[in-house]
Image (cartoon, rainbow, N blue to C red; front, side):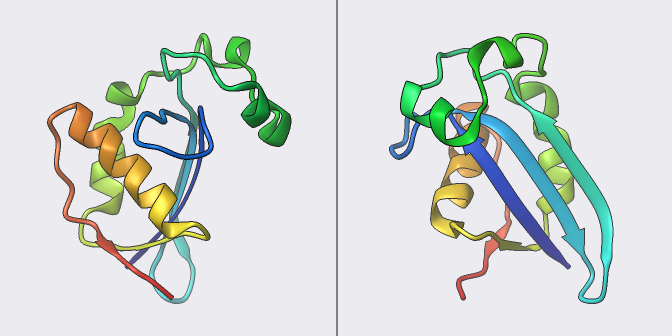
Length: 113
């Protein structure tokens, strides 16, 4: 199984980034078998340059779940999957750092093209 993951974040780089949006598609090698997508309230402000790039503004996230509220689903979807992403290091590390901040661990394997 493959977890195709895309995230948007509060910044453009660094470990202090918080996820503002996450989309996960679970693919069995032939078709998408599960989908998950959510805005995420990062509990910090989004950098202006990031808002200009992705269009996500602080006020759009006020009613969104915080990462800890969706973490179990993210782990359940990605466990034992090959993690695939256009910017795999950035997205994998973003998810890993969010989970680590909660004391969680995921055994997602990273797929590097």
